[in-house]
Structure formats: C-alpha cells, structure tokens
Length: 295
Image (cartoon, rainbow, N blue to C red; front, side, top):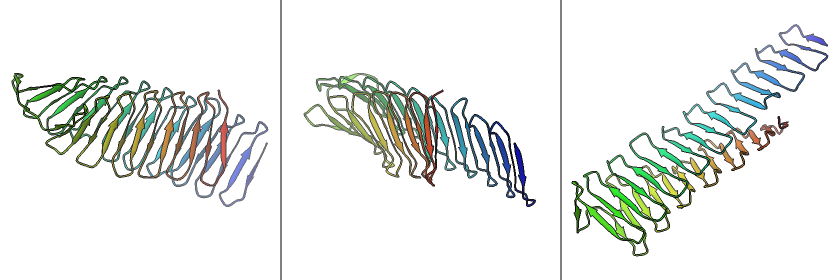
C-alpha cells in the first residue's frame, strides 16, 4: 500500500488488495475496491458508481439527469426535463414524457398511454384495446376486428367483425340511422373523427391508428404490437413478445428484447449494454469501456 499528496489538495491512497481512493483539489473524489467496484463523485455534483458484487451501476450528471441499471437488465433513467424511463428484466416498462404524458408496456405486449389531458388508450396482447378522448367519447376494439364507440352525447355504435353496425341513441335504444361521425370504406375498415379532432382508423384485422390533435400518432397491428410518435422527436414501439424501443428528443434512445437484454444510449453518447445473463458493458463518449461478467 501507499499514499501520495501533492500539497495542493490532491491526494491518493492505495492498498495491497488493489483498493484505494483519491481526493482532488476541486472537491471530486474517487474510490475503488479490490473486486473492481468503484465510485466517483464530481465537484459539479456528478456521480458514477459500479458494484461488482451485484452488477448494478448508476450515474448522475449533476444537472438533474440520472440513471440506475441492474444486472438483470432492469433500470431507470430520469431527466431534468421531467421525462423518465423505467424498464424491467421481463421486457415491461414505462415512460413519462416532458409534456406529462405517460406510456406503459408489459412483457406480454399489452400496455397503455395517457396524455394527462383526458386522452388515453390501452391495448392487450390479443390485439384488443380501449380508448378515451378528452371530448368525452370512448371506444373499444377487439382482435377479431369488431369495435365500438360511445360519443360525448351518449350515442354509440357497435360494429361486428363482419362489418355490420348497430347504432344506439343516448338512452341505449337501437336506431336505424347513423348516430355517430365517421365513414366505412367497404373493406371492413372505418375512420372516425372525434369532437376534439382525433382521427381514429379501425381495420378489419384488428389493426388501427389514432391521430391526436397535438399531432402525436399511435398505431397498433392487432397482434399486440404498436408504436407512438409525438412528432417532436419522442417515439416508442412495442412488440407482442415484450420487446420494444424508444427514442427521445434529447437524442437518447434504447431497445429491449424479449429475453431481457437491452441497450441504452444517453444523450451524451454513453451506451449501456445489458445481456440476459447479467453481464454487460458501458462505453463512454471518450471511447473508454467497462465490462462486467454475469453474477
């Protein structure tokens, strides 16, 4: 072991087992253990750590952005703009966007979205789902292509998988003329426009899309997969097998697989790789790389 001190506020100490520490004149500190674990705290409030025994790591840039990652592939990231991402080893996760909207996805391909303004949707692994609009309307769709809509005034319509429709008035009585807004194309698909301007399209195979007034678009394929794009650089996709991906307007992005492996790249270029066996690596913008083995 030994130590060093330059008399200017910089010092370090090391031990026979390979552990040690360092203190710098700017107030930053370094600590490392014999097993390869380390912890760094910067003068600017940044923090980086890695625990060899658990395979967990974390970072914070001192500007309100931080992340934490576990050996099983789960983790979370939060950003100063209010956005955050959480993912689990089974491929499920959630995302909060800067505008306050949220989305969740599950390992079976189901999920939900809510903009916090009264617009929301859910989708199930079998291709079915529901939606609600801030104008008071709501609807559902099934894997067989059937669907229905209830409008803000209480009127509704229900379409079966053969393209047959029944309309109801606000009291639930069947009527013989169309009571909702929309059109049928003749191939089993229909298009509707809600009072708030949201445009919904439902296809016979259970796929469809919703284009919201803010320009964001959600799609689903009727098999448990889908996508969301806010038109501002924030996107997400989800697949029936639990895999998916996201991109953020700040340049960060990520992708996760059904086996629990994942890759995440921060806005500064730092890339984290998590393998399904718990091993992984992190590559920093300067090209340096750290790796860890499966527990």
